[in-house]
Image (cartoon, rainbow, N blue to C red; front, side, top):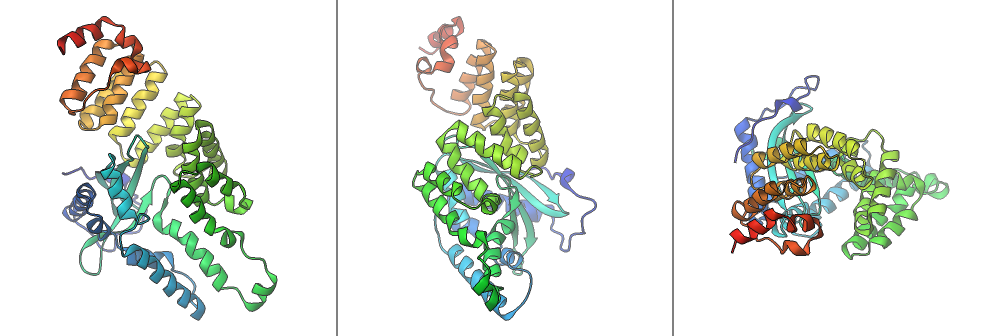
Length: 387
């Protein structure tokens, strides 16, 4: 598979690239990473990330004997957790998404801060949503092209920044003098760092309300940390639409200029039925990603809610043309046709779902959204043609 290089992501003011990679180098990396996820080969996927170089960025900073020892221990501990398969290892998470019905798809190449990147879309299984990753590429010491960092759209920061939160807590404690330890209270973040693991454990066990309760007991300073807000969102989306919308509102207040805000607020404005603002967020996210069929299909759905049906139909068809095997694009196009009561279009799209995607349709008479279609002459004619 091959995607066009998106030069629009370049920043002409950024520092020059120290070590240039060819387009062929970058595409080879992207193809290998995508194929490893599709094949369920978590070890091959894992080896395409330069964890050593990532850790160098995470623990960079002030030098001292005590900090150097803590730095070495932190590196050793982190790399040990990444050295063997685990549910917490990123490679296993990506592979599991594909195995459970989601997908990991290479979208395009580009540049950020004048460094080559590969952009991927992650569709979570069971309509669990979408995420985007940007992999920052560099040639490792052994000559292989690997990712030295990963920008995660759902957290709006690089993985090195997320890991640095943990290193910061270690470094803060190690740097304390004897007097500090006696008389200065511990940093609230240091005291609360275990809460991250506790909240994630609650989410894994399906105890979503408990995870939110842990968040609500944290000091205000800790609640303002991005990582805690994002874990809270993961729990809130499983509790109720209201809880999820509330978590997004709090995120917006705490991080008003955050690059992920538009991406997160797509859901928030959908829940609030503010479809104009939802459209604005989709468009800005699409610009940030570099364009994507999944976002086009979301745009079509928002336009349909605004009863701009002709425009919605055009956008939905664009999404299908852009990515003919993207199931969500077809289902959202069908939603547009149902809302517009364009049942001839509904029949056409349902046939495409069966014939082009090879999917078996459920009994539409049991699905409330199809009630008017089921009562239509088009449905009767369609069913007769299938006998």
